[in-house]
Amino acid sequence: MVSLYREKLRQAAELISLSGADLWITYVRETSAGSDPVLPLLMDGGLTWQSALLISPAGQSIAIVGNYDADPLLHSGDWDEVIPYIQDIEPILLETLERLLPNGGRIAVNYSEDDVMADGLTHGMYLNLQRMIGDRYELFSAAPTVMALRGVKSPKKLNGFAVH
Image 1 (cartoon, rainbow, N blue to C red):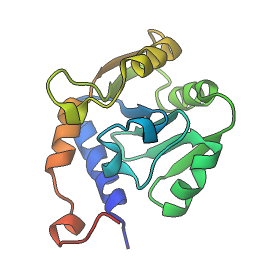
Image 2 (cartoon, one colour):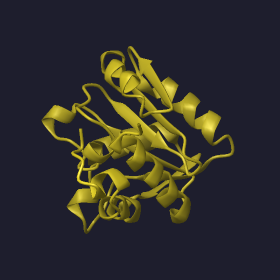
Image 3 (cartoon, one colour):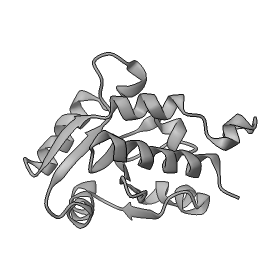
Image 4 (cartoon, rainbow, N blue to C red):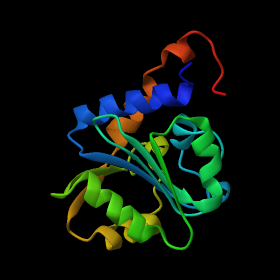
């Protein structure tokens, strides 16, 4: 049986393909201290270390998370690939981006001037991500994707199932 999270990941891929993005990244850290509002649509629980949740328009979902955060995502079966790291997310994130987007591309990230529910990427994390990727990738707002994902109910949600 497909989980609600897996359904939302599939919906996200469809929306990303319509947005013109080559990839959508939800980039967070220490979610217990302040979480991205989109996280409850993508996964159950929180994340401790810097984490990058990547979804491609083709439907591939990859979670790059700290070593101790990997097991729940692996066991959920919702993510196509879970890549744990121990010290630094940067080399693994850059390697994954190179694999997915070898010619560069447009990456949607969670910021918005108008919608708090689509504005989960902190300014510091935005600068951190921008420093890592340089000018190889163009960052732009994922707000239309996030708003649409919130508005489109999955079959499980329509049938009254809880998020769990």
